[in-house]
Amino acid sequence: MASSNRAVSYFRRTRGSLDVCFHDLVKYWSTLSARTQDALISIFGFTVGLMLYFADLDSVFDSPQPPMTVRLAVLAVMCLMTFFRRRQPVTALAVGLVPLTVDLVLDPSVPIWLLYSDLIYASVLYGRGNQPRYVTIGCAAVAASGVSATLAITGEWWTTMLIAALLVAFIATPIWRATIVFAHKSIADAERKRVQAIRLVAEFDRRATIAEERKLIARDLHDVIAGHLSAIAIQSEAALDVLARRSPSSAMTDLVGAIRSESVDALQEMRTMLELLGNDDGPAAPQRLAQLPLLIDAATTAGSEVRVRSTLNEAELPSAIDQAAYRIVHEALTNAIKHAPGQPIDIGMHTDTTTLTIVVRNPTEPNSSRSTPPPGRRCGLIDLHERATALGGGISAGPVSGAWEVVARLPLTTFRVEERVAVTKENGGSASSS
Image (cartoon, rainbow, N blue to C red; front, top):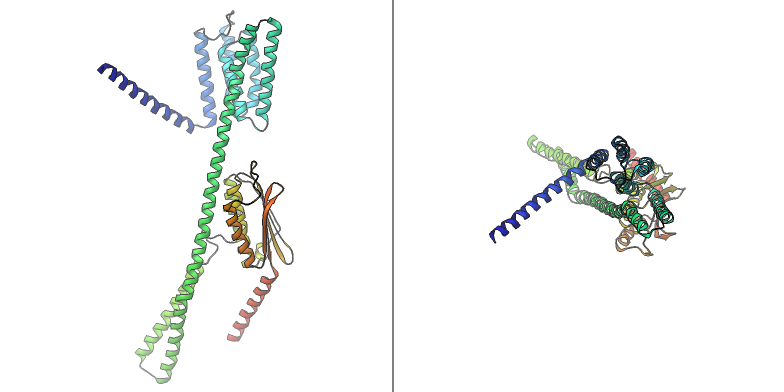
């Protein structure tokens, strides 16, 4: 009983050590470059094939063997094609037909067919565009032709079934395995893009929250503290005038003058701090269309292609319209990334004499039949509508021909007139004071 327990304990420790070694090996393998991995696979294939040849375990059928130098030359060419299995999978598969045909004529050998089976796997997994589909169709046609030819030549069902089983093992199995791996990779890539999109949305929300908090702090400081400092400066100035008429002691005049000087300096420092808090050029609060490339780069990183068509000159836009336009594009872009990750996004912006028009359009997810906005997007649309309405504009959003489209229109004339009036008043005030 004790010896049995020791054997079980030893087996568990050995299994645990093997699991750790295998995990470390897989982790190290993932750190290697694709070219290094392919080179190691080629070397490993040649080594295993060489061992099978010298052990006389390579033949599929019991028939006279060709010279070893010919075998090794064919094996070397096939291993060379394995080196290009990831970069040029279909080309490697096509060129690999040459050593495969030579091997078939000489005498089918296990190493060559195993390596070519790996090339089929790589072509389905790493092929571009429709290449995996064409490879699958071609392999199916070759397998069907081989089975039919075997049956027609031999007329023996047993031999035909054996050939069919071999073709399934060497052709159908790698295609099936590559299809499963590709499906898992697609799911993993989709989840990775979704996580990036969620992080992007969270970062945008964080920046927007910081910007709003900075503006709120600046407004509160201006309303509470700046007013008191201005009152102190004005009252101390009045006190100096009174003291000057009554000819008081110089100590009293110096004291009141110091109070006025300190209050004026504090007011100036307060204004500088308010300008910094309300500054839109900082990285924490990109609020203008000039910062739109930052959003586009982030969306591209998250896996969405963004195409921009714009005829705008941001310098000519009123400040309020410029900031609101950025916020609208920001909200529409983040909604598109969040609810349709990986889909291309088109942004169009143009102006006429009176209106700025913004159009953000993205295809909906392929399997989505939703005709109403999801809850998260609905909240974003409410925010967009409030921003546009506050400026006297309007916004519409909804599905259009398999895509989700947001259209915002912001008036330009009113704000340009108001800015000219403000400039006129400022100039007039300066002239009168001078």
